[in-house]
Length: 91
Image (cartoon, rainbow, N blue to C red; front, side):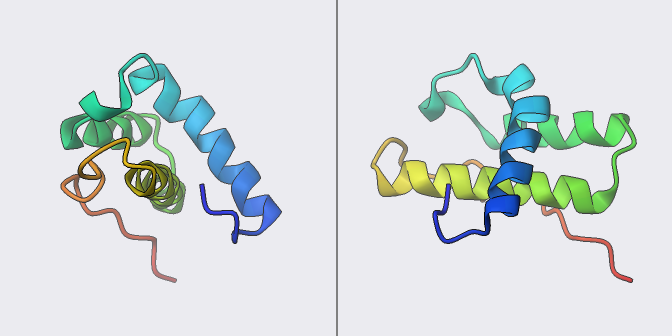
């Protein structure tokens, strides 16, 4: 994840990943994760009736994680890029 993020952001994103992403895709090799897997995470969060902003936070966390994997040449493409677009609630 991005080391330029505020500590509270890193804590929140780590919590989201631990609670929602790892139970669904944590067993997979990083290069085998697809956009369908990312959408499955979003769907699961929607099924739990989590707020759109929380799901958007997950999208941000996943984006940071997979961008880091790209930088380290662990994957060729981020599955988040081809997943469903998640936007924050507008107030």
